[in-house]
Image (cartoon, rainbow, N blue to C red):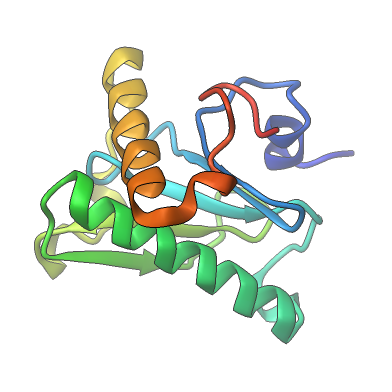
Length: 147
């Protein structure tokens, strides 16, 4: 059975996409720790980062860095943070989020009550910053579809 993330990538479940390429996508989490929190996910179903090959990990890291730079601009954050846990869904994913300090980098701060319009606004800010940063070729034409 396909993972939750594969179902989002395939359009069976709605997603808010900020990045798409042949290897990976990035979309909003429904429980952000900070505004602009994005998940970078390979299209291939790989259960965890320890099971991914070096090439895939390198690609996901490059995507995460590009998104992190966009988040720093879009949210005027001093840093972007990268978290890898993978307990929620058995499909490798990198959490990339604007960060102002280490204390907030806990899943205990995740909010599941963020209104849809706020999630949309945050993702549009990331999309705009990605375009402005020269990554427009990887920004999907619409927020709701990866391609």
